[in-house]
Length: 108
Image (cartoon, rainbow, N blue to C red; front, top):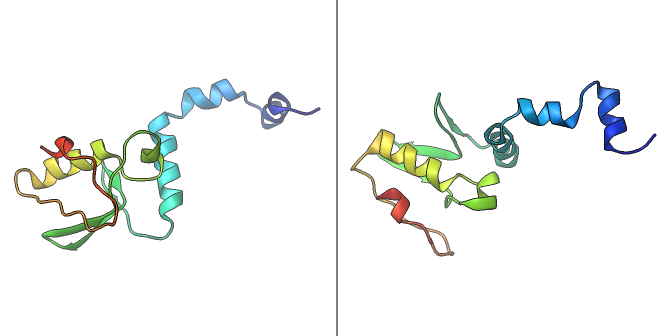
């Protein structure tokens, strides 16, 4: 016996049952946790982001992403929601990377 269906029958479940129980958001979260390794993550009941508070007023994080890149990087939408929720109307974003930041409107 070979193939995915044989492997799944050995495990006692089918791929349809697995995907029905695991949301895409949960899969992406597990992927980001794995990629970030032993770095600290900001986690609460709403957010799970790869960022660190340097001081109460300074946060360091990588450039957020959208689309497929958001699987392993902070989502631009989640990053924006975090800043709006916890730092509404009093945050400034500085891009200290070599690459350009193509986002911006999401934070307005």
